Amino acid sequence: MISDKLNPTPAPQPENEKKSNSKKPLIIIAAICVAIILLAAGWMVYSSQKALQQVQNEKEQMQLDYEQQQLTQDAEALDREFAVFENSRQLIMDDSVKRDLTEKYENARLQVEALQAELKNQKNKSAAEIAKLKNEIETLRALLRHYVEEINRLNKENEELRNENAQIKEQNTKLNNKVVATSRENEQLSKRMTLAEKLNVTGVTLTPLNKKGKAEKKVQKAAQLMVTFTIPQNNSTPVGEKTIYLRIVSPSGQLLSGGGTFSFEGGSVECSAKKTIEYAGEEIGGVTIYWDVNTALTAGDYTVELFADNYRLISRSFNLK
Image (cartoon, rainbow, N blue to C red; front, side, top):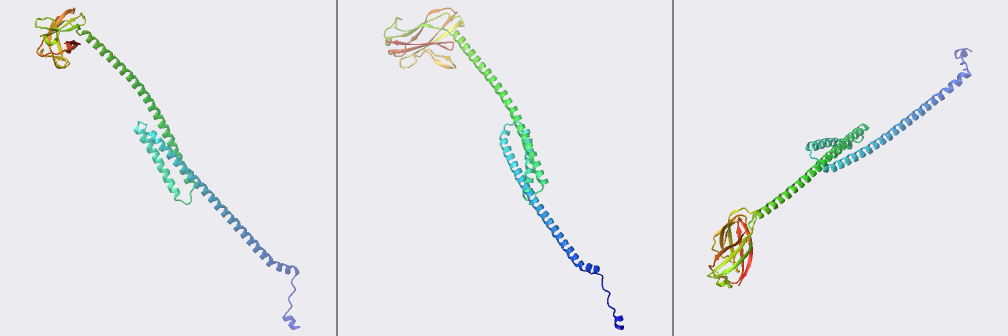
């Protein structure tokens, strides 16, 4: 009895408390499982978002790379167009305009090349950098358009100037042709007037004479050769004293000399004989000039020439037996 009092028997637990104590481990386990599931789900969501972000970034980089390639091609195309218009630039007469246009374009092109090189060395491109490159290329394109417009404008002005110059040149050519034609007409008129002033001679004859002054049939026996002619009336010929020079050339081409020399066309010419007459504008008939034979003569064709006032008045050929 005493032992029972010293070790009293524990009072039995209520049934509800027993059930509660048995559920605690299960709750803890469930909570842990839920936490694990939530953590796993969160990790999966995070991983998925990260993967999606990476894919999106790669997609954006691919798009930026593509845009950079397109912009590079645009810049190269602009350079080719600029090179084509460089040939047209040669037609521009204003050097200051050429220099200004070229400097502006070259500066813009260098900026584009610098941006292209910078982007080429970067692994990841930014949209801002691509946008900057795009703006620079747009600036380059605008400069090229301005360049082309200036070239077209200046070429149009040059074309107008060329047309004006061509018209002026054509007018000058016509004027020069007219001047030349007038000059020729005046020259011809002057020649006609000069020729009109020339002393005329007609009825020229060549006759061998013997020692008695009679006509000789055989030229080998002639003591003189007589040239006769008529000077007709010519109101255009200046009146006054006229010296007429005679030249007789033998069949062998030798001049029958003895009359001295006279001036003709700036030179000195030998003559066979000469005669001075007074010309009053009226006809003078039966004018004679004699040449005294001083060398052996042969039969054949003799040429008679008459000169006066720096003109060759006439040239005739005579056959002497």
